[in-house]
Length: 154
Image: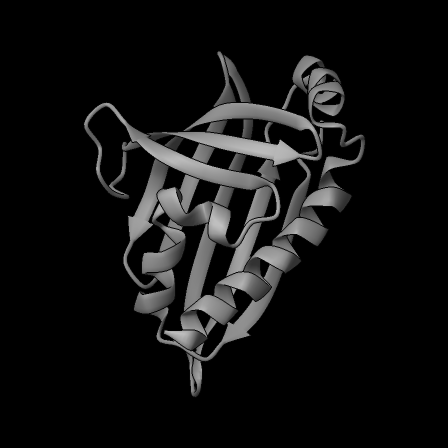
């Protein structure tokens, strides 16, 4: 089975360390994402270190659901990534890469689909999103636009 991967890039007129600090604070994800409402650090974690776990709360229309995330990469100003699961089932890996540019940085957001057939079917019903890859491409574009606006206004 081929893994689906979606990537979106955006130039941001802010230093990579500043943009990294925004996106790696999962408690603020609802400020830029059209689907994620907020995140909450779990198990005593208070920030984005490798192994830190969090609960993500999501919403699309009247549908609401939550997932659990675990940070798998946290290199300030360079990379941030986390794996998402729904109960015992793998859902995805989300990642961000930051490259310095002459005017700030280029941010890449990446989504790797890790769902099996069951969670793919159930996820479409629970979230109301039959084509997760197309939906995520649109959401990621919106997320990076809002993230850029926040970083550039700071």
